[in-house]
Image: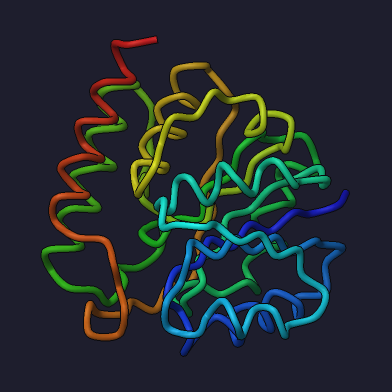
Length: 223
């Protein structure tokens, strides 16, 4: 099966080249679709020099959710994985994530940072992640340990068929809600994680957590 790796990028000059290189080193049959969300720090210019990627350029900053929605229009693979442009996640975990989809055990696989160990991250971020996972589990009567993980793998036809409305970081709760509400087969596998700080370029903030919680509640009751 062919893999499509979606990389939404905004002002990631220091990390994106290595992030893409790590994806390539995994050695899977994969296309890499990078959507630059109108970066202003030189990321866009750097991306134009990186070979063997599909590069899509937004003409203004539209948000991570919109970058993913744009990339889905260019997907030609059978499985889709989201890969952030930073170095928090390790693409060497791709094979474990796609295997349940290849074997037919699942239609969606989440890479969970919390299945085996407590990852090193700020306490406030840890609490927020646990609250979102608990909310998703209660609202949809499912067991989810990591709703907000970047590493989500989907059957391509499934994710491309969703009517997504997300613009920013509410991509995660929107797809989680729609997957769980639809009764789609979902599985979690443990992954590695190295958190970065706001000083290192982390963009999500406390308000995004509030929006994520509201998005889960909204899609529990609104079709």
